Amino acid sequence: MLKPLALTLALLGAGLTAPAAAATTTAQEWRPCPGDKIGMVCTDLKVPVDWSKPGGRTITLKLGRLKATGASKGSVLVAYGGPGGPGIALTQANPGWWAALRERMDIVTWDTRGYGEQFQGLSTGLQCSWTRVPIPDAPEDDAALGRLSDTNRGYAEACRLKDPELFAHMSSADHARDMEAIRKFLGDGELNFYGASYAGIFGQAYARLFPGRIRTMVLDGTINHSAASWKRELEESAKTNESFLRRFFTWCRSNDCSDVPGRWRALIAKAERTPVPTTTANVAYNGRDLQSFAISRARQGKPAWPALAQAIRKAAKGDASDFVPERGARYPDQATGVTECTDWPRFADLKELAATNTRLRKIAPNAGTANTLATAMLGCIGWPVTVTNKPAPLPKGLPPLLGAGAWGESDSVARALSSVPGSAVVHHDGPGHTLYGFNECARDHINRYFTDRTVPAKPTPC
Image 1 (cartoon, rainbow, N blue to C red):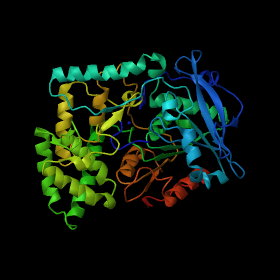
Image 2: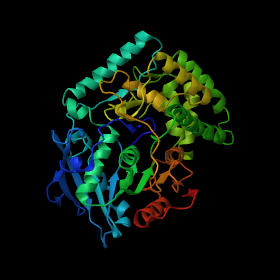
Image 3: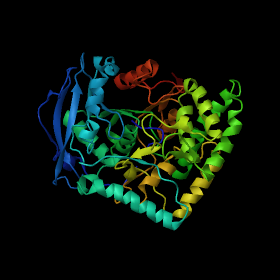
Image 4: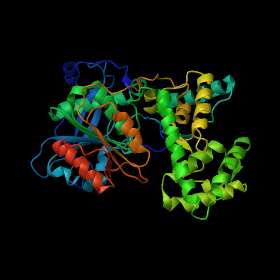
């Protein structure tokens, strides 16, 4: 699923016609899924690696289906994000999520192209050594920018050389074209789609590519990839991060940590000059590292805030050990951005990078650039594949869409859907990432939308 610091379409792809795309897709009969214990059946669907070459090489998508328990009114296509979240394994692990919706609709999912065995996926995978790498520091001169470009290209080439064609066709638009192939194979006249986290970007790509083929679409806890101004969207994401910390600082003033807001800025300034050490060998954190940790903990809500206050106090005294995560000292880090680096704008040069960082730090003095795409996209400088899926507004003529999300996420989704008349967003005023699986109120609204196309009132708290 999409993490807070994870990487997230005006399509520059081929613009295929429907008949050409349909002619290349074939599938086998439905059979029980591997290791199935919930009555899920699977099939293989062949699709082009490169959708601009419908007669070229194909790859296999593994599809999974849970049949409706009552009279079916059609299918809901489900994707969990990641962008490599294994749809079949995740549905098998959480069948209860879909029990009510299955009374009237089939649940269909798939394992996304490229994300194979290492992601528990059953579709054709890139045979890469998928690794997590530290988010790089912002380069301060052209020499550092060149070194960063070379380093990123090295990570990418180790993966790309295993399958250059598939590596070059891993964007959210490629996943969206796969979605259209699945819709046609299922025989559904129009698409019903639930996209959680990064999969909401697949949905936004689909809406741009196939606006006339949508019946219902839910974007749950996703990032706005439909902004008219990418500059403004980066600013909005920085404001959201700042709000997480300000919410925590406000709580502190009445909860025995009134000293923490004052300590925080001094700590960040000190860490930018000299990283704060920890008791873990060879691990020290600079200011942006500490900001990333603090944002992630602050957005978890009150249960996490006492420990965060203590970690800040301890770091201010010269020991950042309480920020070291259990899962590894390299964090903040990110995965190899095979999809992400084709979906998001990159800095054109050092001047643009520096100007963006200065602007975001002014907007968010406590959060800085941490956990924004301005930071995450540093890992894509020098990438051997161009940005093929730039953000762009959604087209006119879409039916009302439904968004959902907790703190920060609902605001992002609302911006994405702001140009689609009649759309609404279900909002949870609390921490969390995506709502459908964990918030019964939101699930009920989403289910009614899928079955009856009922859009809830605005605003809709849950």
